[in-house]
Length: 474
Image (cartoon, rainbow, N blue to C red; front, side):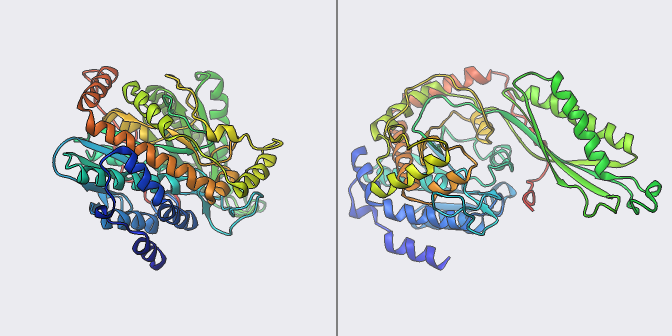
């Protein structure tokens, strides 16, 4: 952390040194702070800490916000790496979400060819950029409030373990968003877009089978294979795929199948996800998966239990906010590569089956659309049911890059990632300033949110009452 302390000390610029009465002044100052925030993001990229293990990444963002005058609450929702940073005591509460967890098994150097950096994980979803841009925006908006003597509270939510750990769900369940008026978020990507987003509801669990070990050749009749239980379960679930809705998704990985072929495994584990764009469908599918696991245990003479790991709602769009954010992203504009970045992008493009990178995608803002097709899941979905929520994406990766790929890790460790990150910081800042300046917009967004959730809506987390799965990456 010594390097991080030094970075913050070197690049810290006081509010008094720079007047920010207009939004354009905010953008100008963010430009001047590009190096500061790029250094922070790349430190988190290097750390590459997985869900609920992000001790140093969380601490670095906390330190940055604390030095900027924010009050910090640590360990919120019984999660050591979760925190809330806030400035202000009166007026509307605008929240900005920030993530910082990495993905296992995706270590990669910041070069345009596949080569591991020798780490356990990598930022293949760009959360090092996510958390840093959101931090930059929160600080910029705080300084705008101060200079303009404006009433309002800007609140940064440090949200760990988005990748399968459902960190935000525990924070919503704990009531940490109850007094929030609007929540803003963004995500790294391969283009600049502020169209309405979509995400699948998701429920995940680890199913564990317990059998009896024995010599697989000399005394197989004495054994009961836990791996047989896993395989029987998988077979039944795979047959079930024919009898679920076409747009449902079920996927799994065997995390423990035994240690040696000549030993009947007395323990085996399989990790399942069930997804759909409606949480009720997900809950039904999950119940059927659980029934398959119980049947597999019965049929193989083993014992089964399971642990819920994550569960998220689908994403609830708010078009009132979405249109405003699209305008702000369009005002900021896209990303322009320098000569070195262009050469890097062209090399990455070749690994994606392209002759060269389509840089126009990074330079431009995608046309606004009021609908979207969901591909993945995010715990932002639960936030969106608790409070009007809006997000967008920026070009932090070479156009054509898929999330959760080595190409995403590589670009995220270069100036390409940093530039897209600053586009996000500026867009978040302008959006929050607009909300603080326009109370009617907040009221309209709340009205739309209430109409979509319904007057009788009651939030029920898909994780139930379990404690945070702090060891799910172990």
